[in-house]
Length: 333
Picture 1 (cartoon, rainbow, N blue to C red):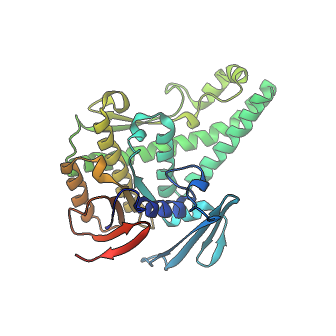
Picture 2: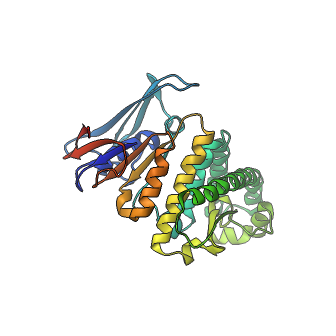
Picture 3: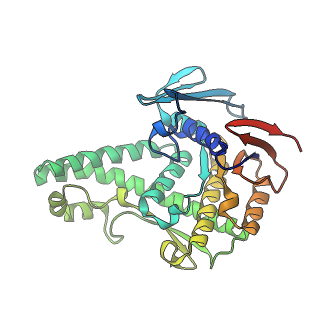
């Protein structure tokens, strides 16, 4: 556990941001890379040394970002796929906006689920990419006024890819639910009741995707886009049998998001070849004292790398770094 301690604005979160840029090619705080690059600089660079494991040798990862794009090097070779970095450096991040995973619409939960499946199911990314490509083709046909025969012809391969996507996601949700329920007990989070996860495929459950696309083709042609399918799917969360987004308070949503993300981290740890890194941005301000202590004490038992930012020193034994005006120094205490 690496505890980054310093005043607000000292530069603590920039360290987590650098790890995120390395693993995902972008910041978790801004969609604009210009907001991440330092003043008076034209580009940013992040380099990390990953130690060897039982199955993989040590490797150096490096990325460079500027307004023109992304460039990467992996083990001394040029790499043109961000997905290779994401696979080699799995990360889970818990930050002040994480409660939006519960309170906001399905988009964030789909992204959460897609990243989970990317890491645990090797064949997931090609299936997801195929479905997205076919969806774009069908939407383009709908926008340009193509005939119904063309729209129907594009639906057939899209149905096949969508069915595979739904099956993989449903299997992942079922496995994740077990981890969530076990961890809820371990951490003793004060939530109104047990957590249940479900998967909504983005269309009526009593119809197949093929039936839905066929039945709504004319209305899709009027709208100019595909209104139902896995691209509208949702990860459904219930607390004590009630929808979490509608029935939970903001504090409960924070606890639920914490539980969901820590469960994802634990789930990935048991399955993925490369151990995932957990990033906790200012959990001291997000969790009350008893829940924070429960989470930190649990994290100490996990034997995986954790990076925490806080304005307070660690409540437990951790490797501490003091951050001031962007300078980081190790603290021995």
